[in-house]
Amino acid sequence: MNKAEYDELTRSTRTIESTHTDVADFARQQIRDASSDTEQAVRLYYGVRDFIRYDPYRIDLTVDGMKASATLATRQGWCVSKSVLLAACCRSLGIPARLGFADVRNHLSTERLRQRMRTDIFYWHGYTEMWLEEKWVKATPAFNIELCQRFGLLPLEFDGQSDSLYHPYDREGNRHMEYVNHRGAYSDLPIEEIIRTFREEYSFAERSELDEASFDEDASRET
Image 1 (cartoon, rainbow, N blue to C red):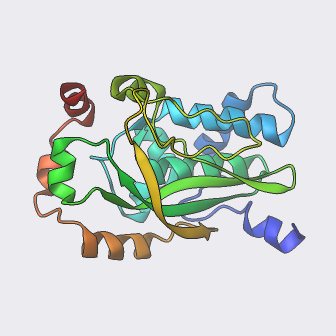
Image 2: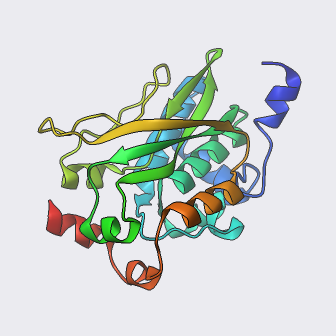
């Protein structure tokens, strides 16, 4: 990686706020005494995965709503906002990071969310790519461990050396998630493109129903 690429992938952006005080403090708290980039990235992954509760009912597709500091403040997020936070934490420590996206077919969701989406395709599923030991490694910190236990999923582990994306099956051998279209990697959040796709593909006319509902409660009733 040359200097221009390094500078591009360690800079702070409007959403990947690597220089925000709260983000930098959170990153330092998570890495503790880890010294290598790989060790630090692993600890950041687990910190974001389990400190931030996964909640796809609370999607705020505005710049302010997608900021890493906002996700940290609310302690809840969805795949994209949690990936933004992980990238910001990595960059705050000088670890190059970018956002990766793919369309996935998710076979485990809540009935309420399926009705609102009217599809089992989750467009622009987000994950984080980190430059570790001279290669890109992918990890998705979306599902916190408590939610995995509730859904009967194997929580994703990350060693900093191999990609850690969604397992295709749950503990019972049922199909969980499959990647159907890779959208590539971005140095900053392509929020306008995500909004455009969501408007084209999803029907959220009754968004208030999601705003007033609890994803955790719905998930508990269906598992």
